[in-house]
Image: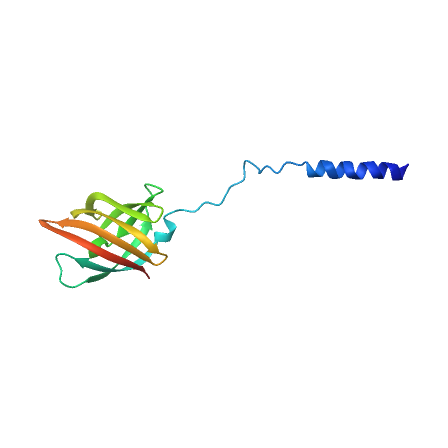
Length: 145
């Protein structure tokens, strides 16, 4: 009798186990990636400008903005110590909307531009600035330190 029971019970239990749901737990958290992470670093800048005959070199620090999950802050933008601009990130693209170049107390001018993360260690940037009455168009390569 035990043998007959085993012949039917074992396949029945295997059938029940194989029918278990493969559905994921709705409360499980998938790992998320912040699109800004690949931009967050200190960068060396080599900048060509229409107002300068030689390339300009300086460093910028890019940090995450607390105002938006797609925004970054570029400190020392255009080589201006203590001045910042913000930019938005979409995939590998950087967009600097028209804005004031400012620090905590004042504005020094205006900027607008775009850029592309061309590799894990390089960003190609194009932007214009207006400081006082001087307008400048720049191309720059940011290289991760």
